[in-house]
Image 1 (cartoon, each protein chain N blue to C red):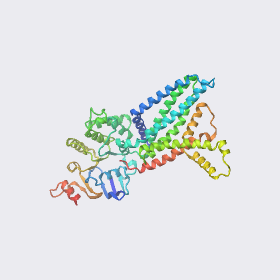
Image 2: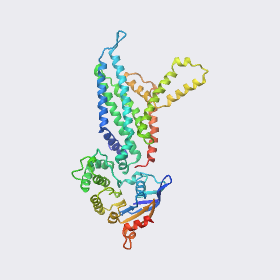
Image 3: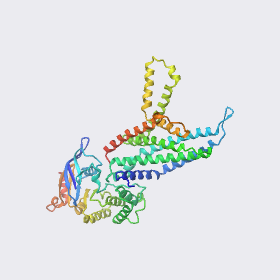
Image 4: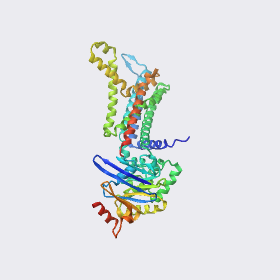
Length: 282
Length: 234
C-alpha cells in the first residue's frame, strides 16, 4: 500500500524524533530505572497480609497493588512525556534541524504533526512496555492472564497526547521549564477539582449546607463547572483502570473523560499549528 | 526564477528590509551583497518562508514563498550551518534525502555521489561532533545539493572558513556552472563573489542600492570592493 505523499514527511519526521529521543542517555536510564522499580514490586504480590488477625485474600491484594502501580506508571510516563516535549523545538532549532527540514517542501503543519506523533508514539510505547511488565508479573502471580492491563494502557495514551500537545504549545510562549510546570499544574488542579467535586456531592456536605446559603451554593456550582470542563487527566486514568478489573463501562458518561481530553487536544493542536505557523524560524 | 516585489520586513520600528524589489533569472549566478546587518539574511529567510514579509511579496518559480511547493527544487545552505552532533554526515545526508521523498536506493546513490562531490569520503560515518567547521559546511552544501535542485540559496557559505576552505567551496560552486543551476549567494566576501557570480545587488540598511550585472556595476578600473564601499558609505 502506498502512503499518501503528504503523509510521508510526517512519518519521516516522527521517525527521526523517536530515534533522536530514544538514543538519549537520560531516556535509557529512566527506562531501566522504571522497569527495575516495577520488577522489584513483585515481592508485594507474594507476601501474606493479615489485618485485625484476618488473612487477606492474596488475589485482592495483588489486584489493589497492581492497580496502584498501573497509575504510578501512567503518571511517571506523563512526566517523562512532558520532559521530552518541553525542549523539542529548542533542540531542533539549536541543532539546525528545524531550518534544514523547513527549507524543504515540507509545511510547518507537517513538521509539527511529525513532532507530536513521534513524541506520542515514544511515550505510549514506553508506557505500554512498563504496563506489559506489570501484566506479566500479575499474570504469573495470579496464574491467570489479565489482558485488561494492555487495553488500559492504550486508553491512557490520550492523556499522553494531551501532555505532549499542551507542553509543545506552551513551550512556544514561555521558557521550557515553565511550560513543563504549567502542564503539571493542570494535573494538580485536576486532582484538586476531583477531590472538591467528590466533597461537594457527598451526602454529608450537602446535608450540612443550608439551602438558603447562596454563597455556598454558588461555590458548589463553580466546582461542578470546573470539574466538568477541566482537562480530565485523573478521570481518564480511572476510565482506563476500569478495563483491568473488568468493571463495566456504561454509556457516554464513562467515556466522557477521554472525549474531554481529545477535545482539548484538538483545540490546543489548532492553536499550536497557528502559533507555530507565525513563528520566525531561526 | 526569484521575484521580490516591494518586500518589506519590519521588527517594531526597525525596517530590516525596506521595499526591496528585484528578480533573478533562471541560470543566473546572483550575489546579494551588503555589510553586516544590511538585511541580506532577512531576504533569504523571507524567500524560504522562515519569516513572513510585513508587506510585499516574494516568489520562487512563480509560486508565493509562503507555499511549501515553491521549495520543491531548492537547496539551502544556512549561515553557520549546523548538524545534530549525534548524527554522522552520512546519516544527515540520508535524512535530507528521505525528506525529499526519495526512495531508499535513490537516497543511498545520491548520498554516495554527494559525499564524493564534497570530498568527504572516509569521514562520512564519523559523528558530526568530531567535524571541523569546514567539514560541517561541506556537508551542509552537500545536503543542499541533494535532489539536484534548480535553485541553490547559499547564506554566507564561506563564513568562518579558512582561506583553503573558502577556495574549496568556491571551486565547488564554480564546478556547478555546467549544471544550469541558479545560485542565490548571500555574501560579503567581494573577491569571491567577483570570481563566481554574473549579477549582484547591493543592499544597505534594508534598502536596495543597485542591482545589475557585475560588469555593469564595476566600471572605469574600479573593483567591486571600491563600488561597494562607495555605495554603502553613501
